[in-house]
Image (cartoon, rainbow, N blue to C red; front, side, top):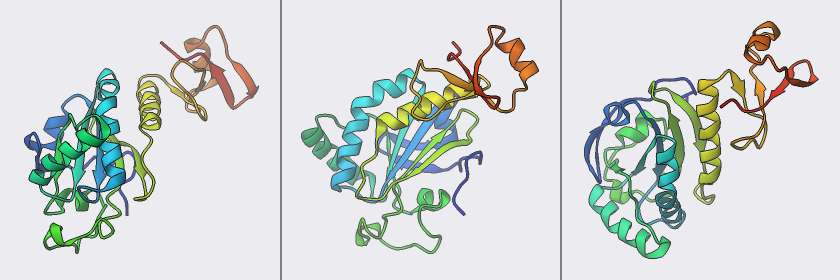
Length: 219
């Protein structure tokens, strides 16, 4: 059973490119993005790590810490980082876990419990299920899970859009419609009765159907 939204993100200790961390302590009061890779020196992942490095200021603005993972040792991550800098124009500027004992991959249901042995003898195809994105809130609960195949690069603009929605809806009793972007109208959450909504939105709302109550994005 994959980890569901709302579950507490498993805590762990791990070696990273920025030293040993305990995950929950590292998150602190921030949001976190944990994103995983099946192996170092793989082409799609190389583009992803470079893209995320360039976008780090956008995640910083939202109070989101970045943590990468690959099923290879930290010393290989450092070598891969130089390739990423050379080919993508930016090297990872966030920690990368060396998950050589598969501990984190197993905790997060990305690899079967039976996996063991030398990670150097495993191919990217062996680890192809280690292609996940987890967005974790300050309460250490999983807010979003995305799983990608090896041949499809991740869209970090979409991940930023989703984080904007998650953070907005964590603060206000609203939901965001399809393709919503920051600043656009939102929907009053179904858990809010009309009587409650009148107190929150005294100016009223648009309602093409009684269950679709549209208001401007709360500040």
